[in-house]
Length: 112
Image (cartoon, rainbow, N blue to C red; front, side):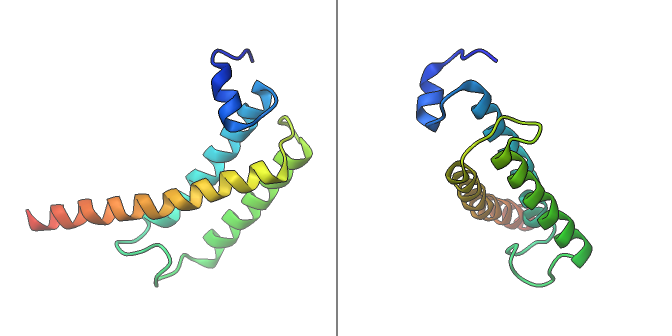
């Protein structure tokens, strides 16, 4: 993978484009799974009814495996534990933003 924009690599504080590819992989996997929690009900994602145990544990186990894969470099270039944490912080922050946007859109549609 060649760097088309070296500034992007500096902004993410990664040493090479392959690490950026791993960061994007982790973001897509984590963000996609966390989006399931946001879209599965009409209120906040952390309120009842909670997701089924099978769904919850399938996501948790998948996320643990993906974090290990990124940290140890299984099938993807290795990234640091701190970078994995930054990806998770980013995704959790966006869960709240997306939940607020979803609730505002649903409220506006209900008024129609």
